[in-house]
Structures are given as C-alpha cells and as structure tokens.
Image 1: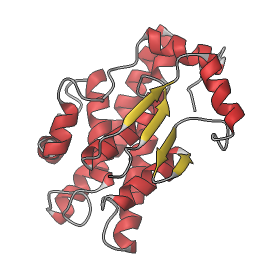
Image 2: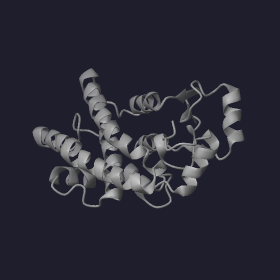
Image 3: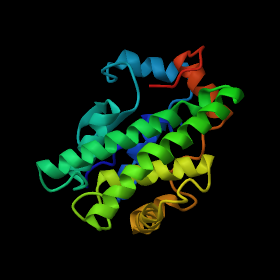
Length: 229
C-alpha cells in the first residue's frame, strides 16, 4: 500500500486548506505535521526539503512538493480531477484562477486589524457578488450541466465550493440572487467524499482564530499585517 501523503503546515487553513479539500474530495487519506515552533521550522529549513524556504510542503509519491499550485496540479491530475483533455484543463485552470483571485482576498483576513476586517469583508462580498458569482452563474446557465467543466467533478468545482462556503461565513446570504450556484453548492456538497469532509470530525480546519495567527507570526517571525506563504 502506498504511503499516505503527509502535509506540512500550520494547524489552520491558509494555503494548505485547498490541498486538504482536493485530497479529501478524491477520497485520499492524509497525515499532517503541524508547525508549532520556530525550531520546527528552522529544522525543516536546515534539512533543505523546503525548496523555496516556504510551506505548504507535501510529501507524496516519493516527492517533497512545494508551491501550492504545483501541489494542487499534481493531485488534480493524479486523481482524475483535471479534465479529459487539454481544452478542459485550460477551462479548469481559468476557473480555478478566478476563484483563487476571490479567495486571495480572504486569505489575509485573519491577520487584519478589526477595522480592516470590516472593510475587507465589504470589499470581498462586493467583488464576489458583482464579478465572480455572476461569471460562474453564467457558465452553469450556458451549458446547463451539473459541473463547471466536462459534466463531471473537477478541481474547479471543488475550489469554487470551498470559496462559496468561506464567503458564506462572512455573509450567510451571499448566494441570494444566484439560483444555479445555490443548486451547485447543494449538489457538490452532497458528493460522498465531500460530504464526509464537511462533517464534524474531519480534517477540515475551522475559521482561523487568534491562536492560529499568533502561531504563524511566531514561527515565521512576522511583525506586520501580512499573510503567510
């Protein structure tokens, strides 16, 4: 039996959460090593396994992969979540890229001041409901299928559901006015592997709290309101 992938990151969402989502959706069990001290991080740096001195890092299939997009690309390709041909892959990349733009506004959220969180929340909700959600609503309307690409589950669907749920944590009615996305959310959430990941007790991480922020700052020696790598 092949070894389980091992994920090296903090005990929180950050850039690793999309990797957890993709593995879980593929039905792949994984293990995690949480960075909790500066000494742990320095040991990884000294070992040379962090190619660009950053996490996330994932051990999988005998490789030690860094760079979030490279990791996600590999997982999507390995587990048939990356389309059946080059054209479908291009569409998946395009949709994932758009969703990444939206999620990027949320990634730094835990590290902002209370005042900036209010401003950022209003900003990201406006962007989602005026730019990103209308685009995906149109995709679903135009082809009339259950999934974004090729009428089968792909990385694009998984990534969009993750973003939708993150935004609904900030504004519970964010999908009002987008009936096809509402149905999409229900449909993708009901896929057995994803339903399991969304259930209590899974390895899905909760909203990042002050403890997570403090740990990241301490380990990476962050002194400003910036997001982790």
